[in-house]
Amino acid sequence: MSTLMDFLLYLTEDPLRNVSETMVLILCSLGALIIFSGTLVWRRHPRPAEVNEMENSSRVRHLRTLKSHETASALLELFDKDGAGAWPPKANHDSWPMALRPYKDIYLELIPLLPTAEPSLDDSINNERRNKYRSLMRRLLNERINIAQVEQMMAAVEAGNWDVLARDAYNGFYACVAELDAPWPFFQRNFGVTSEGGNITSNVLHTYNEKGERVYKVNIGMSDLIRSSEEIFFRMFYDVEILAFPIYYVMIRAIISFEENDRESCVNHLENIALRLRHLLLCFYENLTESRVSHSVWLGYVQGFQGWGVGIIVDGEFVKYDGLSGNHVLCFQALDAFLGMDRYLTDEQMIRYIPVNQRKLCVTFGKHSFRNKLKEDSHMKIENEFTKIVKYLKVFRVAHRARAMPYLEQPAPERLAMTAGKSVIEGRTAKETRDALKALDQLLATRLKETV
Image 1: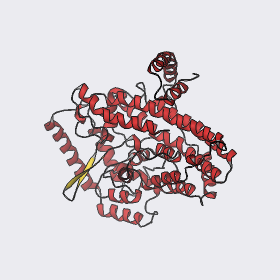
Image 2: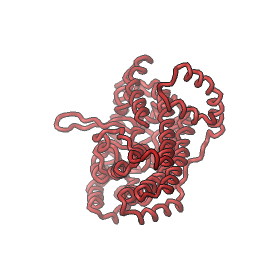
Image 3: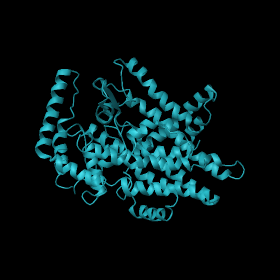
Image 4: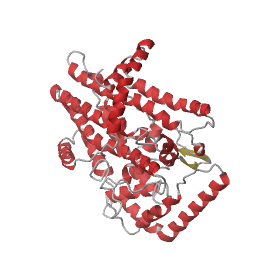
């Protein structure tokens, strides 16, 4: 095998491969793993992805000539509206109307009080800290925020008057006020999500300013290891969408080429997708490692804060909404739809956590997926390129499954009752924790099998 990725592709081609043969292959691959690990050490500090404004502008101009096709129209709507003329979405955190500025000031003033170097398991201590924090936030909000002005402004925007609050500032504000009663319902209606908590868009993508700097951090005052792990982990999601936008564009071109019976162009576009996907997945391979995102701090300090669920009482019953999850990422939902695969998330989960324009884009990709329309003889080159794309995606899911478990297996007893729905760690002993993780591992295994 020429590369470790090629080796993993070979292993995933046939799940029924002879066990002894597989063991020999695994042992023989250790050398490749060492070389690959060495490469990762050498590239320990990969550069963050950068938006190529000139190339994206060219892509968008071309998309506007294709907008009669619903895939192009859906991507343009996402770019123009949710993205404020960019993707990943543009978020302005400074040029806000005066009525909104105290929200950011209060966040930055209080966030150092939220994390703690040594989590407590004493309910009385935790309740005291929590009550003090909430009391202080309520007091500051009451003193500094004019709710009537905020609601008037949000209502004007909801009615279509974007002059009172530019779209990029609206996105920045969305990142700042997750779950606050007054503004949150407006965001729910605008983005078409029902969750009372945040999502990947609000809590990750919108937290970056136009310079690519993350504004709303969590672990202020914690160790360098905690803070760097937080920065690298969330930057990974932002970089994935930077690298994904050109893929969305080429997917549209591949679809249109196939529908116009331009097979040569279709093959070229699929080759481009495969090449770009391989580069995109390096963002994951290079960053989700112990040397970049520490196993020891991820569960408690990095994912922990974002993974908390939130709930409300509806008709006398408690309805719980999950915290953030990697399966909310647009890129992989779009790829699955383009490949003609069924969705991972249920209809209810999509409506709860995935903004409506992202959902529409994926629906159009699924509607125009042409992989199942290929004829074996006449579309051989197209089929070969699809096979490459599927294999890259399958290798990613093998790696994701393997890398996720060491992070989730870390002890974090303070999280027992307050994690995301798919990440609840119920066990108090190592064995109980492993048993509790089996369900999550099975979900990952199932998605791997479905990637064909």
